[in-house]
Image 1 (cartoon, rainbow, N blue to C red):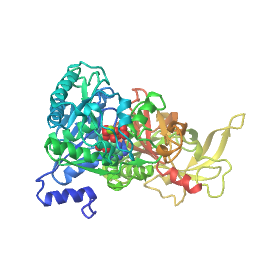
Image 2: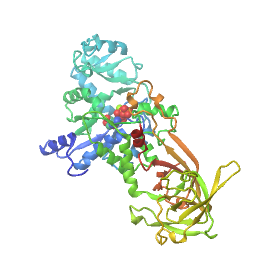
Image 3: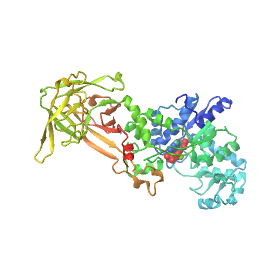
Image 4: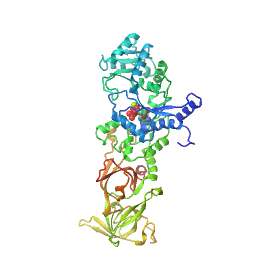
Length: 553
Ligand code: ATP
Ligand code: MG
């Protein structure tokens, strides 16, 4: 974070709390429910919570809000931990709301003792009906006047497993006429005979989110509990619980969630994409999950930079996916090693080149000379990209066409002398001649050419698979598009090039490195690679193809 940047509204609050002496240091938390993989929206929350603590010398807990046993799994817990670490953050403590089940139970008993909670036998339909509407007050039912002793006994019976799911609930006794629906005797406990990923079968009653989240914050002495805007109407209940339980006064602050173009971010929708095989798992590189972005080659620094750039707002908006890609490009330009790869080969025979192999030198990354150089074999038979040749070329075409010269990157200038075709008239190879004095780095030819092409030496090329990704959705604002969001899936979002030809360096390169395939984009090795064939994901193209599309339209 740069020093001269103005503070966001949460930083202002934190600074005020520190300056006034309200707190000596701050403690924040990142509280995912382990019911799915984290997405880029969570990254914003992570950067905010951990970033605040880092900036102000405080700490951040990683707390799993695991109060819903039917949707939560250990697999998700592990992936969440991996993602937070990968993003570059360390938590002070790894905690689980389920650690506090006993304490939260006693909080409910305490409310009952104070006459502030009761066991309700009504059906969920009746409860909903009696709740009223935003313009009509609710109705107080007969169970509301149960005695303290009766409530405590029934609650113990609920815990002991005497009742079936849905037979009874516990509600906070607040105000059935409140203008805030969340204060109309909200349910705080329900019966659920389900196996929990951590507490197993120890419990058959579980606290509701609103009776677990704030309480967990208090138990941990969280100073600033940061969540997204939809929790604004929950805040009075958050404060009510703290006040009536007389526990640590954590404070809730809300910021606008991140929404991004051409993607979805709700875990429910992401789960649908996975379960219905629209993508190949949670970390399919087209997904908006952090694990997908990691697999696709997005550097964690770029995601942090992106979160910093979008800032922390109080009003929701839609952020352009291109901004994230811009951050990715900016970083990779500085770090990615340059390599030459041909996707769709056209054979070139250099007729005046001797029948030997020469080892050429080329820089790994002109943006960072400390990365050194690599050797690239060169001979009289090479491949260039099919699309870099045109038999009948327009005027300003600076690539290969009959009679035209181009530079082969880090090698020589060649001239296209002859086009060889098969009997059907398809171009099968080009015969070219090279200019011996034009070698890159020691060019004395005096010839200026406008086009430079990437190429690979045919005899030493290694075959690789390349996966090109496009937006997973065809519309900008997927969440607000009419009808089913899956109707907007871009069916052409994955293109596989089964046989790309790469320079041999890629075979021995560190597979964790980022690469720039010259003129093609940034790439990273995928975990589907085998001993015999490397598979590469395109992280991002070199230029923003979508900005160009938008201009055309
Ligand atoms: P989803 O709606 O995608 O399922 P969630 O809010 O239910 O997300 P949680 O696991 O409860 O997911 O979220 C953990 C934290 O991340 C919460 O504090 C939540 O507010 C925050 N968060 C979730 N989505 C976003 C988002 N798009 N932008 C910013 N913060 C988010
Ligand atoms: Mg949630």
